[in-house]
Amino acid sequence: MANWETVEVTTDLLICGGGMSACGAAVEAAYWAKKNGLNVIMVDKATPTRSGAVAMGLSAINEYIGYSKDENTCEDYINYVRQDLMGIARDDLVFNIARHVDSSVHLFEKWGLPIWTDENGKYVREGRWQVMINGESYKVIVAEAAINAMSEAGFEIYERVFIVGPIMDGDRVAGAYGFSTRDEKFYVFKAKAVMATMGGAVHVFRPRSVGEGLGRSWYPPFNSGSSTYFTVMAGAEMTCQEVRFIPVRFKDAYGPVGAWFLLFKSRATSAEGGEYMAVRKEELSNWAPYGLVKPIPANLRNYLGMLDTDAGLGPLYMETAEAIQNLAEAYKDDKKAFKKKMKELESEAWEDFLDMTVSQSILWAAHNIQPESSRSEIAACEPYFIGSHSGASGAWVSGPDDIETPYKWGYGNMTTVQGLFTAGDGSGASSHKFSSGSHAEGRYAAKQAIKFVLENNTQPNVGDLDAIKEACFKPMDLFDANKGYTTDPDINPSYIRPMQFMYRLQKIMDEYAGGVSSAFKTSKSLLERGLELLAMLKEDADKLAAENSYELERCWENVHRMCQAEAHVRTMLFREETRWPGYYFRADTPKMDEDNWKCFVNCTYKDGEWEFVKRDVVPL
Image (cartoon, rainbow, N blue to C red; front, side, top):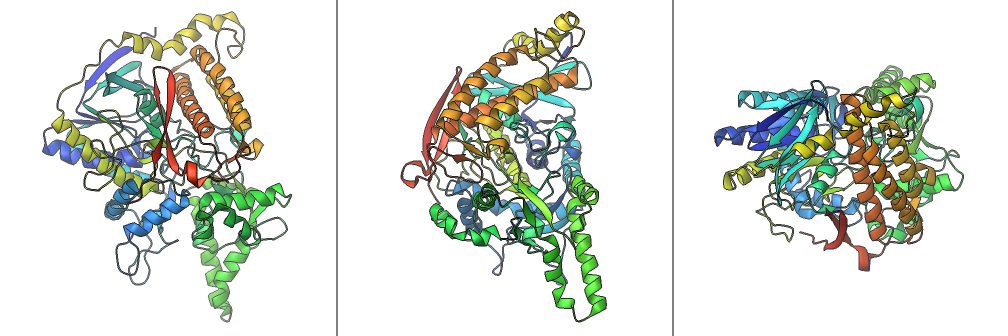
């Protein structure tokens, strides 16, 4: 076993993660914990200033209600989210986030985030729910507020510490364990309550970008399913594990399309110029009632484009030049004003990428694409697992205590495991919270977690940790014991390296669970074969080997991804219908079945077995 120092840290509340929900949790928990004489510790595998899905920047805040008579209501937002998820959403959770989200946005502005305003001082809307920002430093600003709040309260933040899994005391969470990627230290965090806010998952499926472009994806490549693994291994009930998100993005560099659709009013077309949203409009009636209202669900918009591709009309394009020309058209009678407006629009087009996807700007330049004079190719990405965007996978959590809801068994945002809370990408069935909603949900969950600690103020027992430590470092011990057997350490009959393991996982998921190469289609037989191959992969996970602490992290990230993969395949197999065409299509059950499957599909992993149950969808 690796001879690393064991460091034991005891706290009241442990926040695992450093993204938007974790930063929201830190701000709120620091205040209430200090007020009540409690302690909080935050642990991140990176550093909060550049951790999570917003790390590279963002050009818009995608959830802002704007409570006024001429804007929106929480009820409007609930209807929007439920519609976009084809009827499968937790109204209580969505409402709870919606009623708190504006306060988080106003905090961002107070902390220094530049939000676009018009001549009347009102936020500039990209769409009904979005506000435009200069967001290249969005995460830095939000993280600094969390760091300052923790520091002023006298609480510690542990950076570059990878959390492997939960520590349990029977049915109650007792903490978490992990290791440093900088020092030779094994960490045991003992806590009365834990927040699992470690993001969603990417690289479970083979990405479109391979080889030297492997790290290029829409969702950050360092998100490895740790929230799912933590909550599943703790015995928590999970929900919507079949719901993966597939965004349409500018091809190869994954640049965002939201600003083009909403702000620039651009059209998406086939190679022949047909606008698939108009040409294939009749197809939407096959997915009634959800396909017949506005806005059309994201998965159905994807699906109509995929039909064009299947029909040989690809590639698909964003008509950027047309959009810019249309917006400048109002200035055509004034040559100087027209030229100025064109320059302004061109600048905004490039800034959209420079705020959040710099590589798209580089690709445009490399391909001689000028958005004001040429169109640009778009494509559906590979699948991702998130609870915050247009996906819904995550843990099943208790609803707010002041709302009449059947989904309530304890403290708000607590999982079915005592003392284990989650938010953001970690909580399920409450999508479209995005960055601002994740922050607001993190704040709420942290306040509830502090309440839990005050009313359950006993330190759980962590038991003997020697076996956990041995298992944690087994990949390093395996490599050291066998590395001399062959001249090339990558080729060895005694172990498998982390990259080899990930390629194998991605191949299984891509070909059997509806990835890019299978045009997002799967079936009962394909899923069953995928489970057979995943079972063999699971056996081989015991032979993962690590040369150093970074590879040890990669090994455990693979284990986390594999857990997310298995939950996904099993849940898709359980749900015998196609409800989200455009995200995945079950070719053997190609239609939506409202009578039998308008429900949540939930699963639990205990004693090595998966259990599934249907939960009713109950609107507020």
